[in-house]
Length: 243
Image 1: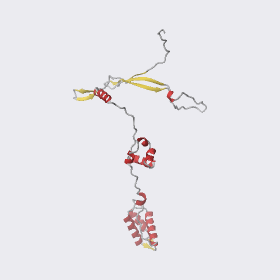
Image 2 (image 1 turned 180 degrees about the vertical axis):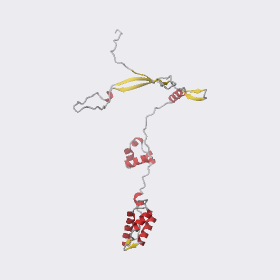
Image 3 (image 1 turned 135 degrees about the vertical axis):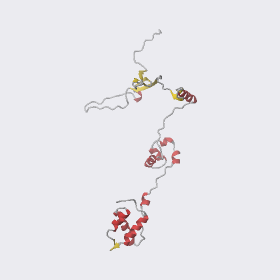
């Protein structure tokens, strides 16, 4: 049964017991099994200690059975160079590979720092550049939706049930890349236009409002008012002006 790794004192103690129980140049029968049970390790661990100590004794060198695990496995992880990363320009920090090249390390090391929380990923979005007047108008709009409930003596937001929200919606008539499922003998459809920027777009105006419910929970109004096209296709009217 394999237990935790033996420390150096336990390893030396095991070797001393083995040498004290030598019978015909071998440990006493059953001693290895007893030591394995006593120190809760596998018998192979005890045998390896005995083999190492016996070779050192026959070679006439000092017996040293200290563990080599700290020297082999205790690898100090590379510390995240915070100051160096901060000094790297943002365009060179857009991907793991670019950042690794900028600070002269491996991409796997950067990925490890991300998993450890030393580096965080952030998607930077463009925000509106609000002027002082813009901020004032937004604050004024928000404050206009607050009222004092005199019954409960607290401030509340208006439910805005009598407000209609209007928004413009753009729709492409087709996609630049479209997947179709065809039968084996069917001809592949061919679509073309001058470029992706010439795909026909249609603009609609949509109007919605908050839904309305009755006291029993019945839906009286589903918030959808309608969506209407901005333009219509029809023959041009003749100019009535006489030239």
